[in-house]
Image 1 (tube, rainbow, N blue to C red):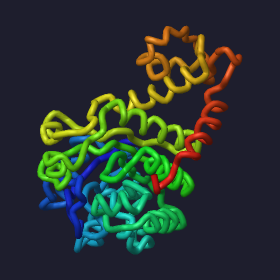
Image 2 (image 1 turned 180 degrees about the horizontal axis):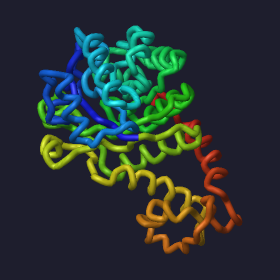
Image 3 (image 1 turned 180 degrees about the vertical axis):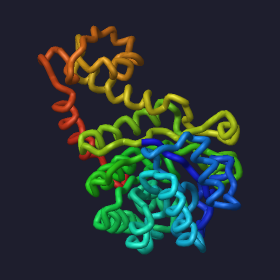
Length: 327
């Protein structure tokens, strides 16, 4: 499935979160003609019958004329023969799910960022964790797929809080999740806090540790992880002034989870699908393990053979013991 994106940077946002400058993140401006923009994007991204139009950026359902934009977008989608529309918005701005459904919306990305209220408050999100729960349930009841977006290392965040957020979101059983560590962008309140010494971004090593454990939670819950890390191209990367950016962050985070598996089981050899070889041992070559092809991921260690799924269940149980909002 292809995505044909149209961006509405900061549109509809009643407030500015401390970390947010969507124009800097996307280098896009509000489209003058939504219809023209859709046709241009469809051609540029080689859209086809397996494509979905994505209305990204800002708070789409809080844009003053969002219903008019959605109706026009739906007409274009039907004319082009695309599969449907996905959009992103805040959890407290989910309005008229019947209208969304009737106008081709098949998926909504909810910007939750955290499920701990002190983190939300410190980030100036101005919504609650309960808003996220209500939004997910409302959309799912309407038959609309839901993806939840989480960030790590926002102001006042800790690993325990990010894990708590992961378990809370997993319990809602969304169709997918997106995770990325906080990057400090130019012209944001977070940049000023960073420059004045009031905010310290995560190191790459710390971000990989946190996110790899969040991946474990969602893998164990059989929830699709749609994206790990914040995409930046050569132009938008110029606007990142701090934080754990790496172009292969997602691959590295998954590899970190496998590293924990290999070390904690004291693996001597590992079996797994060839397509996962680079994640399992590609970045863990220092462990000097033999890799053999197999349909399942299994290690041979001092305790015998241990399957990844079996280890993951126990590992996630140990993570749940440290997942709290008050730490």
